[in-house]
Amino acid sequence: MKQPVDYSHEVHRHDSPVVRWLFLAAGFLCVALAVAGLFLPVLPTTPFLLAAAACFARASERFYNWLLNHRVFGPTVVEWRRHRAIPYRTKLFAIALMVLTLSASTIFFVRSPHAQAGLAVLGLLLAVWMWRIPSRDRPR
Image 1 (tube, rainbow, N blue to C red):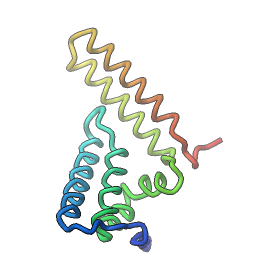
Image 2: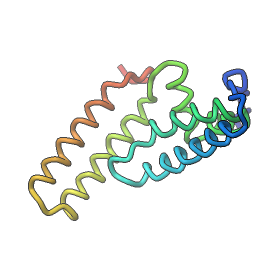
Image 3: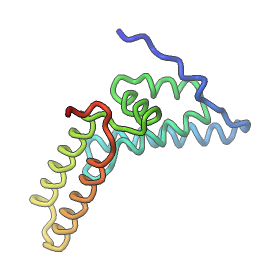
């Protein structure tokens, strides 16, 4: 088992307890949306995780450390915070899942040709945007 890293030095807690509670609530909402994004088309996971990390960094060392040491979510957040990059496998998985869910939505649920075209364009734009984000571990 991997030894947890202490990221407490990156936390700058807000002075107000009320604001810290608001940041905590927003952080957990972002984590919930990130988890939902694993299963719902067009709902991104990574931006919500990054927002959660930003919220936890202003509210709680404990939850910030929990998120950055999480075996599923942590590596993506750490990679972004350190290098402004997304792991290559994460990027490929996100694009593949997006193609799969948008294709299924377009084929089985959307009847209007205009809406189908709109979803296809949106999916293409999101895939191109995601592909352009750097990956340090990308095979050459």
